[in-house]
Image (cartoon, rainbow, N blue to C red; front, side, top):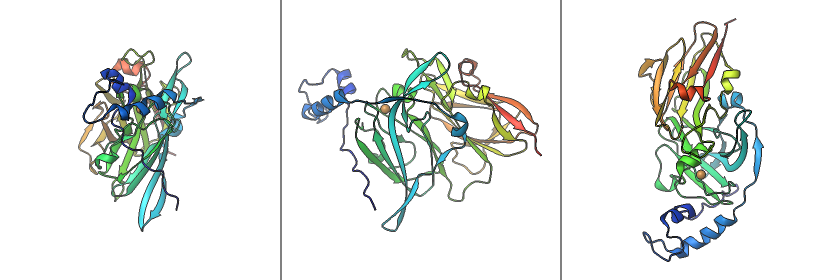
Length: 329
Ligand SMILES: [Cu+2]
């Protein structure tokens, strides 16, 4: 059995943070960290090179694409292992606007990672992104697996923990400025299934994100699953009377909250996906940044139905889509 790469040694501060404080190279000691520690990090950061390739996102595939990793057996224990690489990619957001995204595995959002509660998970994280990045998971885990330490370009680190609690969670880069690292695309959903599973359903994932295309601290464009207005022109096919289980995450930076609304129907809400019974039925739900839920519904009538945040300015700037309910045969 191959040994996983060794976790990178601790680095509490990156170059940007020191420059921000104006103390890089001044020889001061901050919280016991001396410049001896800073300088190697400075030089390697300046030398970092990252390739930029154009990528074409496939939001239709991302909807129902779950990454279960690979199963390994080590010392009699099952480990679910995931491989994630941070890279930079040119993303064509619409006919006029492109953006250099920072992303995990060449997609925005990153892959939907999926495990079952209680399993040991191991994430092998390679940073080829040019800047320092990390993977911070929501959930319960020890401090060393919390993913707030910078992983420099060209380095690999390993996050390992027991998946808990069950629910819909997320992962994202936690390097400052986090707003920038997230809004450029470094986020994804992390689903932990309850040990007993959930009833059969058509399971789909929608991640709401924003793009600050001119670095003014505001979003110019928004998207479900990475591409503005994609599901407006490519409606999501679902079957009449079929139970749909929607895993939804709001990871829009700069706007404090966004709602999610579906037309001509109501949904059952499983808050943070942490219940096996619904807590509420509604047709619009509010999520602050990083909030997520499971929403369940089925459409009794065929046809096309909109879904969107009811902050209509957000919807009008790309966070808009349709379900195409196909008649039952
Ligand atoms: Cu980052």
